[in-house]
Image 1 (cartoon, rainbow, N blue to C red):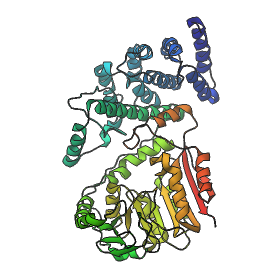
Image 2 (cartoon, rainbow, N blue to C red; image 1 turned 90 degrees about the horizontal axis):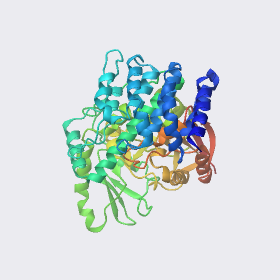
Image 3 (spheres, helix red, strand yellow; image 1 turned 30 degrees about the vertical axis):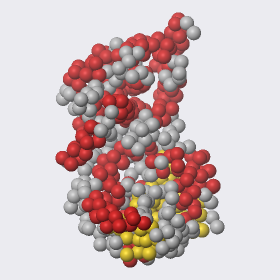
Length: 518
């Protein structure tokens, strides 16, 4: 395609977008974006389109300006900021105009949000951009301002500042121990690893800013739940649970090594069949490993370590109060807070219908929904399970009477058909490649008639939302976030002998209740 042909096509798409009726504007924007973004061979067309897109900012209304700013940001993001690629260079040439628009865009408007995302791609204009963003007229909050500052910062390999930047650097308030922990793991990285982590952090912050901007342009102001930080120190009370509290679930609990039955003492559990022992401390039974033979003499040391770790301040509380609301905005498109904690609680309470047997809160995290289940089915029936000790530390403090098991969701330490109900809330997407295995295990351990309640997330329908979802690089997902298609979840449930009895969810939430068939 010649440059003139491309320019003609650009003009036609821009005219259609600029003149689209309100009910056709979003669809027309997606057609426009699809011509110049997201395709392997679109760079040449994008370079031709960028000057016309920048010029369009002078003639359209603020909503259309916001759309154009988002598209320019997407085009700039297609090339690494250090490459001086032709598309990024073309988009960056309009920085002066973007700053003029920002100056008059107003506090908290969708256009301001979109321009912040666009300007986040130009670290070489860092000082001018930060000066323009810091005005009283814009009144940016600390989250927006620190996201912008982080994306415009260049990596210093002598002192790399990695992690703790999502959903914004301002959301993190670290104590000295946490700062020391960060410095320790960062120092151990090679320059290549540090650079990779830095780039992933940058992409993650950009993806959050871009998704917020795209939502705001389409729907109005995007809601960011406040970031209340609850201290993990001094909350709750030390757990006094011992072997007897786990023994009441002895018919269900099994040795993860050989599936043999377990004997319980206040110091742990042991399997007579394979001579494996498992430590128990402060109400946490560790079924993730175990000790045999000469290792068994180290059991006391392991239990002591478990007690020390359980007494440390927990990131679990921080996750529930700060990180999870942000995650719901990204994975569930919950920028309007349509799905509230109260709505989640109500769903879980209404749809958990156990038959006889223990009720498992799988991947319980810090215990937010374990507490809901405790109210619904009673403490005596409940088991919490997670593989992450920091999360279980928080659960232990919040729910000291609930037995908690450290174990993998992929090899559940329970006998076949022994559990009355299983809940897995906001966790399946944490191990997407093994989600089918986890669901198969849930089907195995449920009794016939027992319910399985699930909250997870699917890919958004909109290709730009999907791009932003996939561009989030969490520590557990260095290759980018991976969500599900609804049909594949239903297939996994059917393969596990689970029949869907309820399915719902706004945005890209997936709420499912399934029942174990006979």
